[in-house]
Image 1: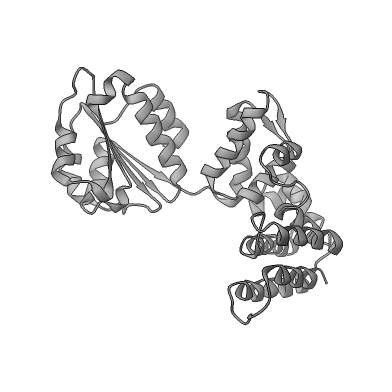
Image 2: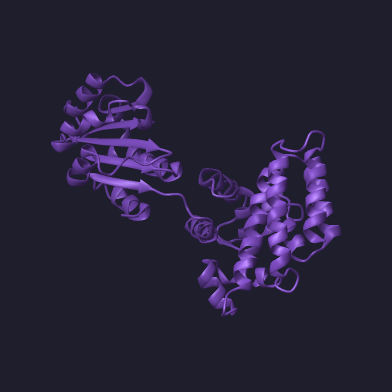
Length: 332
C-alpha cells in the first residue's frame, strides 16, 4: 500500500490495531504518524487515551500496560512509539503483535533504516495490522513528486522552477515541503510557481544556483560559470563542492549514456534514463559540446576534486579556488 492510499484510509478513520512505519525516508513516516495522531482521537479524548513514547526512554512493562489498557470515554486508545530504532526490545513485541488489543491503535515509527522483514514480529504485524516501508524518492522521480505535491497544494509549477527546487533542495522531502508551504503563504491558489517566485520567497537565486552552474558547464559558457562560482564563494550557504560535484557527475554520467544509446530520440532517451522529456531536451544540447573522451576525462577530474575538497592532496587551496580550477578544467 502506498502512502496516499494509507492516508485516505486514516482520514476515513479506518484504523489497524498495529502499524509498523519503517524505512529510510523519514518524511512519509512523520506524515502518516501525524495523520493517525490527528484522526484517531478527538481533542477531548487525548488526555486519557493517548500515549506518545520514545524508543530510547521507553520501559517495556509500561509500554505493554499502555497497549493493554482500555479506553476511557472513547472508542479507542492511541499509543505511538517514536524513534523505535532506539528501542532495544522491539522483537519482544511479537507476542503482543500476534494478539493485539482491538481497542488500541499502536504505531511503531522506525526511521532511517528498514526492519528485517523476516523477523517474527514483522510477520505478526503483517498478519494482524499493517507494515509500511518508507523508501527514498529516487532522483529521477523528484521532479514528478514536486509537481504532484504542488498540485495537491492547489498550484502549478513551471519546469524551470521545478528543476531549481530539485537541484537546490535535493531529496530532503521535509525541507522541500517546508519551502513549498512558504510559497503557499504568499501566493494565491491556482498560481503557477515560477523561478521568480522561488527567488523572492525562498531565497534561492534563479541566476546563481547549481542548476544554472550545470547549464553553464553544459553550454561551455566559462564566463557565466565563473560568475556563479564567485557567488558561491561569497555565499557559502548557497552551494559548495560537496553538493556541486555529485550534480556535475550526474550530468556527465547521463551525457555519456546518451552518447551510446542507439536511439537518440527524446522519448527513447527519457525512457532509458528515467527522466522527464523536458530535462532530456536540456541534456541533449550538450551532445555536440562533449564527446565521450572529454566526458571520461571530466569524470576523472570530478573524482580528483572530490578528494581535494576533502583535504586529500590539498593543503592550501580554498573551496572557491578549487571550484574555479575545477570549472575551468571541465569546460576546457
